[in-house]
Length: 384
Image 1 (cartoon, one colour):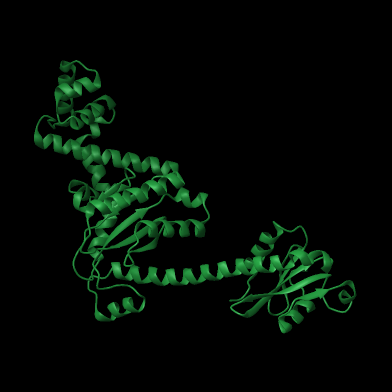
Image 2 (cartoon, one colour):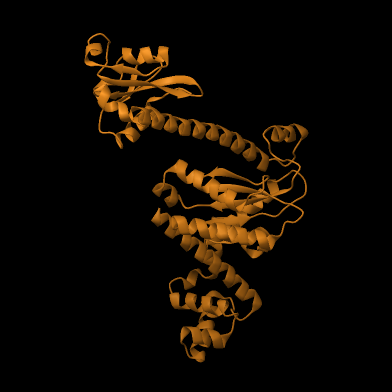
């Protein structure tokens, strides 16, 4: 690993929080790449070059500042990673005064670098997995070559899996540091989904794909409780609502169908911030497949004329939610039952559709679903 200016600047910033003196970070060429004194950045530091050769700490006094190029009094120390010197950190000041905390600063620097190094390694590994899973979910036929690639990456290709799609609001990422949030999500998912054949992968735009392995003892009720508890803990921690869609399990190595189902279920779940299993959906999935322009056209042909009379729309909503019970609907709307009958008659006359007939109530149910979805989308756009 090489020291880069961005990481070196972070080191200087972190050390500054515990030390008021001046700090420099020097690369393996002897060039200062970060400093509390910005004018020194880019300068050659001969003292650091000596440290790079000797791999030993160097005390620089006032006499030496006249002999060595680009140096100030202080202590220069090697930064070591995996037994290799990758740079030098220097603390400016009287060597006797900075000596007590110089070693602490060196160790702190190496810890910061190690953390960055392991984060980089994890990022490379994660990107490799993401690329593999992106390819896998889109395959309709999985050949032996692909199975072998999976095995080489340590993925159990002989285990049945199903897909779960998680959507986290973008606002959560805006309020939290990305890499820390990422780590917390992975750690939390490992806490709840501990089987070695379970995988959670970043899926872009606040989405995560959970590939859940299916053991002989798999129980949907138990897994549902797991998902709900994961959801509860995450939402409590980050003060948000997350939606989760779960696909069905299929035998074999192809997960494409389960992936498509998880996406559809998540799209339905997103409307309520809930948890939805694809196998529980019937009409929701069908309605989601209808293009927006056709939804608009359907609305115009059914309830379009009622949109300027919100009391009739409200009447329909309550009438449907109360299973076409005139008595219950009148009670909820605080209306005389005759007034409700009059409104239902108005609806029939204006639309040509009778809400008291099965065909009519189905059309109105679909229309009101479309209306709610489009209204929710418009609010979302305004909020964004």
